[in-house]
Length: 294
Length: 232
Image (cartoon, chains in turn red, yellow):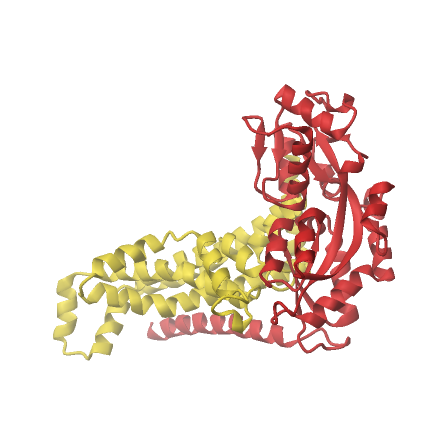
């Protein structure tokens, strides 16, 4: 009897140790061939849309293979991503709220600020369209119609790029959205779409996440194509002069990678096979003003 | 209904084919939560024993803090661990935010009060006369503790089970301090959240099934060990 008990204790210990050891072994095997940078870890703070749409799953492995860096992708809202940049907690940012980004560029927190790509925001809602958004002549009129009808609108409410865009549209429409009809989900785009679908409500979404989630949603595109709805992504490196701990080389490599012609081609092709249309338009080298004028 | 079936089928498919990514996430989960539980035991069992046996001023206050710590919300732990591990934070020097080490630390903090509280409760439940009797055998302090812990082994196993259960199921802290990084800090709970926001409900359901099986499997094994003790 004594023996079996000792054995059982031993088995606990062995399991725990093997678990711990297997972990140690794992971190010790790096991804061999490519160059091995001195500080291989790059922290990328980005928006949920680049992750939820699946784009990063295509780009990151490519970058890691090419450069030997290991990217730690922290997918949060753009607001949180910018805040991480402002504290020097991230090395490089891929974000989509130009108005808020300007602040970081101006105070030299973000350097090597480059236009990467764009897609557009769309106003989606139930097919029945109780607020008759489809008949309104632009997105602002559409929002006014939603408010007038007191139809359910689901807002991200998380200070993300999409949320910032949505808030700015309400301001332009001259409406302070509040009341029972205006819900704030406080979650990422994918989850917010699920909520809107479930509640037969409207929401503003980036096209990429909508297309990626479409199969589960009872939502249709009701308004699109307004110049006001452009969704522009920039990459920037967190300034190492301000934050000595950031991985300068790694951030620079990622910054360059995003506007590299091969990467831009990957971006332009992304989603075509699965959704029949590209989710992002590659824009490296173009100007933001040029995009808006188009 | 169909979605649920699809999810379960997907789970079976992932399990049977041994999908490398799912396997890797499962192993990470087991390693992280297992290590965290182990650490919480190392901290919690002595602390619980001490609290149960030693009388000192403020003991009830400490006990009540430990007891309320048993329900410590993982997001709260996640937030505070994040703040401490930031590059600009007090432990920024170690550069361990967004690694499995960070998750292990957070989870150990979550599990430690559970183990401490349950250990202490188990020991306090023993008959004081029994404790006196053990003492009367003329044992050394270490022998005394050993005999006492043996006496409460059922309670200790319950503490391990509860501690492991608390950490393997939490998502808030893992997400915050780990960052849900593919191939590194992605565990079953954070992967499930991600798949839901990507709209891949079948994969999410599959992951949830695997997580439940894993939690059940470990608990089953611990329960077997616990019950094995009965014969003695």
